[in-house]
Image 1 (cartoon, rainbow, N blue to C red):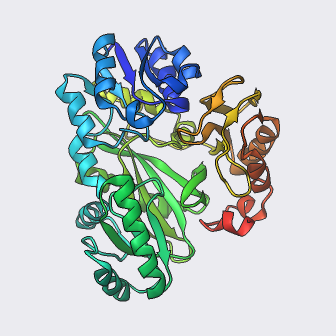
Image 2: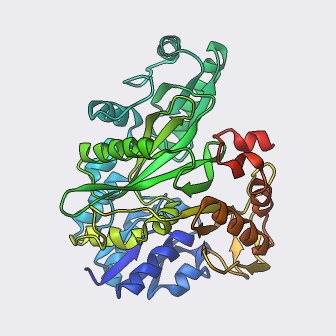
Length: 445
């Protein structure tokens, strides 16, 4: 194991990685913007370096500043967290070219999975089910209209270089397609520097289920169960749970086998997630995308499988075997994660501000991964995630009840907060039954 690790991220995920690094005796180095200087991840690191102003393009996405910080502190490895530079293949190559260890998948795998059309085609060739859709970008609006007619409406219009629920739109007919195509292409060019657009079949009632994979140092790819991620607003997740209440043992075996094939198809190493859409009526599932990084929702897998995924990431990067037996992975119990965001609980619009009260819940089966404490200020420069509330129990019912109690105990004042939404969700009969889909939030509103 290397003896020093620079965490090229911020907030709760930086704090999370630092915690595991320090437990393993690895010197943890934080980088931070001027706006984040007083956040817990900075004070808890063994060493911290300011890499620029609040604008993430000048700090957390500033490759030269991050590499300078690594050189000045003697860091041996870099963990990118999620977001920012975590799925930037050029950054991964630059890190390795500088003689540092990259804690993530290889740049070639990032590149292969970063283009959604290329990823779809690779997965289809590997025998992973993919939804009906284009095998190359729709070159113009006429090509999109032709493709949609062949696929059948409704269709999803999606940025080929997008991810995280961004750069997507639904068209129920040609009139809507003409609007959505231009909108998605313009957004993709602005956000990703690539206006390529693909057209896929849209499923009105669908569940979002993903599989956690880990490419080991010896070349094997293993799957650590599935996560249900269907509670979403604007195609972005709010709640995740494992195991999925919609997945039978037979379906789970198919999910996990497909995810392993997906990882093997690109020679995957380190942690990653294969995201799929599940038709709850037919029990068919289709590849959606692969996230070549650690996911926000990784703690629910940690609870159910009894592993520290960050530790496993570090071990793979160092060429070490896992702490678990890959041939004896057995899930136990149930875990649920709620994303506590600085946003209003009705329209989910961001609401930054100074935190005047911050009291976290505690107790059996309760974990909070937070990025803030009382006295900190939530600025408008970054994602609105304040903390992740993770609860576990022997059964889903027990986990839901613990989540209800924990939400009631969690106190946040100052910025807007979506805790009231979770209190409502956890009383919702549809959610409590486990028989819900990606439309649940819209039906609640």
